[in-house]
Image (cartoon, rainbow, N blue to C red; front, top):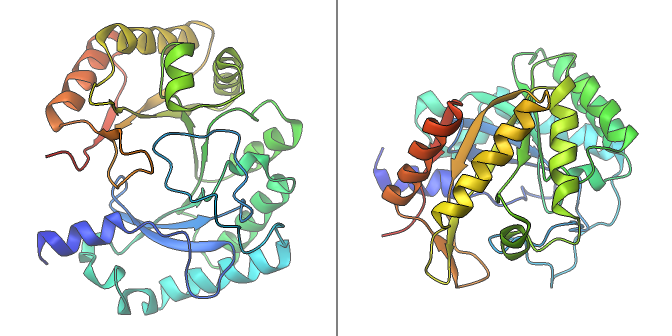
Length: 291
């Protein structure tokens, strides 16, 4: 397949598929496989306002609720579409190479923060049951979270249910200081709470730290900021948190803020090299669209 078609396949992360409300498929550039997304925020509710977020919150969502029966039916149908190959009869999935036509995960990730959903715990149970029903136990359940709600009992019960099978928790951490956190993530949630939630969760559920670095008004993060970020990682580990690895990436698609742009490959490589020297943690890098 051509490089252009492959790029088209993994840059198309639309959170919609036909008339489904909650479930959508994507070709994941990180896993090099199919990820089935579960959008628990059709109302576009989020407690972050990241400068790189592509969700258009000026347009109302199609639904305000999560109907668990509809979610179950959509997830079952989508996984069957994957299993029988129908998914790969249309673009962008038809452009995916054979090696990428595998189910990597079912990911709680959509138009907002999934753990703000009032029925998060029940949605996890639905996903576990459908995965088992269709014999797809090898597919991981993945939670992609900003960590702000990891201290909620219902969220913790949902994560413990995820731990009964293949799973990963990806916790967002895009900054090392509160000042930079406010620039990039623009949340009213105090930065120390994010760090505390990541640390306390990682004590009983080892997790992956997912970090997006970018240029802000043309400038990449300073070395001082990156060293502060590394220090936050070391503090999490020193307090008993288990970090499985780092996902370091940058902007891959256009952002709503024209001053929020991708790092060059060389800039991301420099951050990764510094992280390796300071933390020694395993890394996965995903490059962006900078020229």
